[in-house]
Image (cartoon, rainbow, N blue to C red; front, side, top):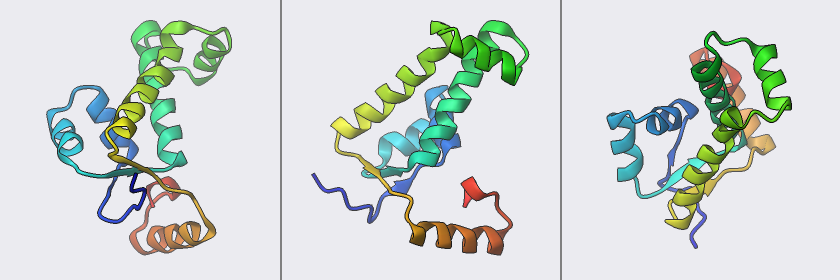
Length: 125
């Protein structure tokens, strides 16, 4: 399996979330790509936002500490977010379309430069 990130499209968390919620444009991009890349930050952002979406669908208005409590009580409806994300990433991996990028010191430095240059938040850089 080729694990080189060259020519891979880096998936921002919003692209994955849009894909998982059925957005046709996101589906076209992700399904049409030959190679896709993610890192642990993207995984964390998508997982959190899926949990938040499922919490809001079940309980209404988002409340962080309430959501955290429901997760700690193993609310299966909310925890399904992890399964949804794992299924998505697993399918891409089985299709040999996914590259996991490590967050190295070089990546941190480059992200800092990009954030400073373009006025971005850390995870967006």
